[in-house]
Length: 219
Ligand SMILES: *Cc1c(COP(=O)(O)O)cnc(C)c1O
Image (cartoon, rainbow, N blue to C red; front, side, top):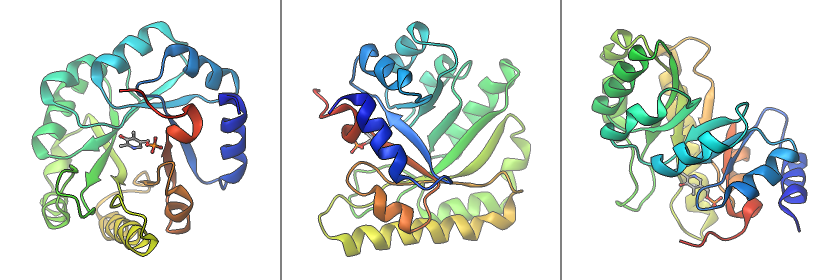
């Protein structure tokens, strides 16, 4: 199946309330162009250098999402154009994005990445730490970022019970934080190629799908 038909296939299976982020990391610009021609406008990348290179050569109406771990010393390179950063995992990073966004006169949409998976290797806020941080009001001073919701990944396992429990936990965490924000806190980014139907059943509003669209990545 072509990239275009896979995009159309997946889109037709998603409820209208769910946004599709096509995760194009490790795939060439030609693959993105094929998806673009099929109508896709939102693409996710996980490495700054690759994201910047692609943004420079591809159509300017693409909305680029940063979905991978972001180091503070790389923030400046993406702040001029990025439309959503999914991977804010510390106060230091939030402050850094805010500072760089102010320099560019932008307000940047961000998601707080929360760690719920059983693997210790995955990044993200510990739930209690995030709740304390948000409740502290520290975000009120960061006028150049807008927290749109949370992002998370489920445990890497075939056991659907565990995956579902992880997604339900993310949905609960998002709900528990809603009272600290206005109605723009509306995004629950969860679900990838292997688990997005479960994520949607648990309330996902944004799925990040790579290999089911572009095929296996060659690292
Ligand atoms: C790579 C990646 C995805 C996409 O994974 P697939 O299994 O290829 O769909 C989604 N989210 C994040 C954070 C990723 O790094």
